[in-house]
Length: 302
Image 1 (cartoon, rainbow, N blue to C red):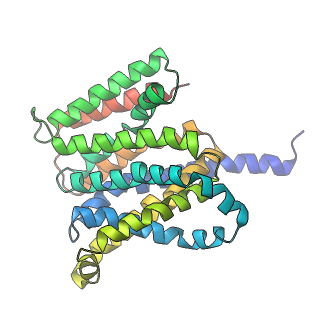
Image 2: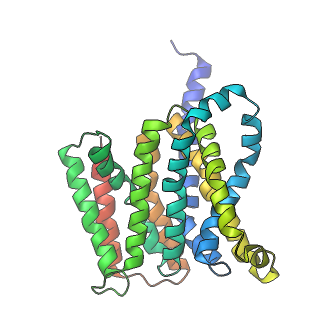
Image 3: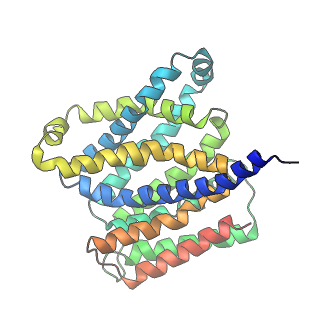
């Protein structure tokens, strides 16, 4: 029979999971407008690499502590290659794709296309990782892809026009889909904080080497670029750093399915930021987003 203390804990956990989920949706949904603000002072390459650098700096204290623990070193050492692959595919490539696309797309559109990540997770899981698909999931995938085609081909002006930058965002979600399956196969044995921290330790040098030949520091210390620098720091420390830990914590408190429901909230937050920022949003974008979310709901429905 559960004790009174255990009942109180179980009642608190769903509340905490909801708090973390809403925080996650707010930060990740705001990442697209933060990219847009960062681009006001930095080039797309500097935004992508700077985001990774600030995320690495966030994890440095954890890395310093973990490096002193023999058990952690022994667990990380044989998986260094998997951490590197996961970092490059799941963080480096998408960071550069989103930064380049953010210089040309509305932040609301980027947020809508980002919702395709669960669909590509399912597709790539079935093609390369032996995951089984149900009929409703196939239906959800087809709906999601149909909605994404509306966003790609009709989003720039409201009329038919191939948008190459929207395709870049889709490619980033393909990377996310592969990475989710890859981490589940090769890195899931590590605690979330350990794997995330060491992942950034392995890709951090890529960010540093990318920024060194540029005038990143000159722009960062320019007083007129303070707003863009703050946006970039928030993007790295919160968006790529702390929220990665929050996401894993939500899965521990509730379930992976509950954590994945953040996918429904991110486009809404991104759309609200787009409206507040005066972005023009066409009816076809709402239609495409709605179809995408319907597809994601079918994929995740019990």
